Length: 254
Image 1 (tube, rainbow, N blue to C red):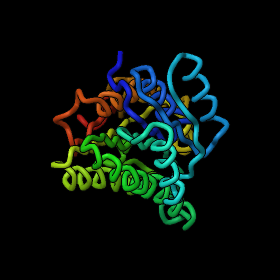
Image 2: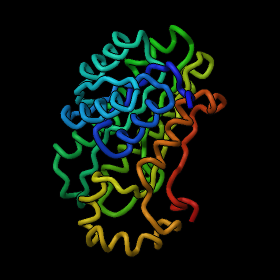
Image 3: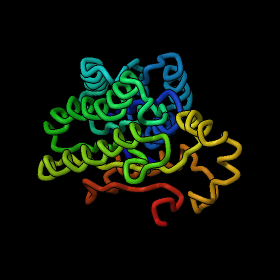
Image 4: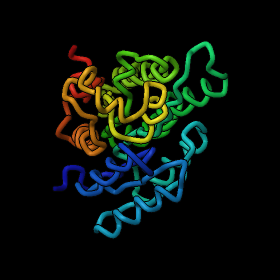
């Protein structure tokens, strides 16, 4: 216990899935968490549950595609907890489609949330991390930031951008005490994947055949990604920056 004790943590997309699991794990290990999501009702429930379990958390509504809201989110963390030590960028959308049929609004939303949202939040947090020369930025990319799949061209482009964003930030601040790493989950059992599953024949079919593309033979669970996010957020990973860590059940080992 206490792996991120007294660290001020921001988690986006904390209302569900990987973000929710990560907010809980950080709080369980002593982190003071600002749990953020575009759906305030869902993230308020997360914060309330953390408080009920004896942790420290506040909820904040944020649309990460708006840079002003991202700046406000970081300001809330600084106001509540004095600074910011950890940011986990988990907010994301996955709107699959045949590429030449994808509408402009889908392209804009995907890039604005998945890529620009991580950019805006990291940019807002870094000045505070530089003040105490200590900070960990954890970007949730995707296995599709490394390899693509049918109907995910735009999503893959956005997540590939997150991979390169992570490497660039890591190099810019390597000597300043600010680290930046990314996690590339494979197929995890979260609602963000359900629309893609429908285009691939349905969720039941996907899970029946998952061993064909994810050798471990099952979907991942959000908590399994949250454990990794906690490690990257903590000082246990102090020699890691610019790392792109796959947690994909062996998908990219093939």
